[in-house]
Picture 1 (cartoon, rainbow, N blue to C red):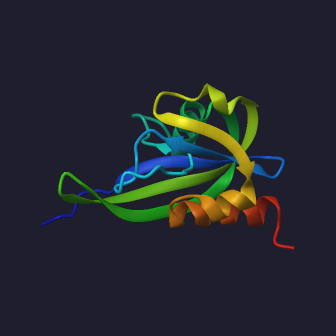
Picture 2 (spheres, rainbow, N blue to C red):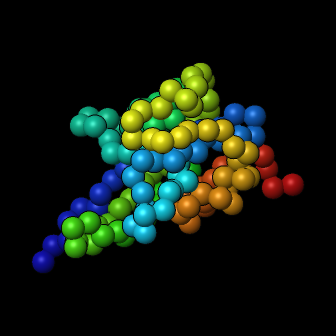
Length: 143
């Protein structure tokens, strides 16, 4: 039996002056707890991954950005309606252009700037923490 294609999303680590934007989605974790996450979502038909990441960041984090480079992909499994879903999320390092995190959409409870190194420690999911850590090394450096 052929495996279905993985679910695909695109997101970004938005940076400005050593900080990045994190969000608290209205959708909770499986255990009902709040999630601290990076903005991300599914591409619309015809969108490139970069275009999808920029649009999702605008919608969920209220800011416009420019793509600096691709950070990598996070791969994981989750359960939906008793089915195991393979998920791939492409993350990009995004440079802040303008906008206000308070201007986020209804899918987000809160969006705010935090120090990039704090995000690398406090994001809920391992894969997103690793993307923030990679951004730290590119933006702030390791020494």
